[in-house]
Image (tube, rainbow, N blue to C red; front, side):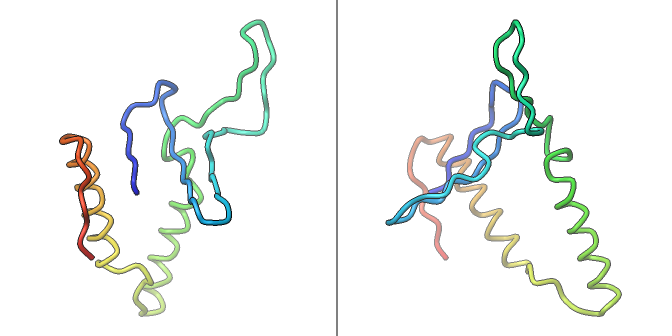
Length: 108
């Protein structure tokens, strides 16, 4: 199941939850900027990251380095066009489900 939301009151939020038969993993339920919690007259505050560039800076750098390495070494990346088309298909299906309120099945 893919659940996609487009509005978070606190500006930015992304997380992954994997549910299995013997437990679950919840990855980054709060997009924390750092490990600091602020206690003041406003209560307890945990700062969130402002957007994709800040949260995924290292990932973007690694993607660019992988591209350069592939060019220099004359090899193909492990991620293929198939991966990109499937993720796009999932995105379109999620949008259709959101607009229609119905379950959209994806053929593999």
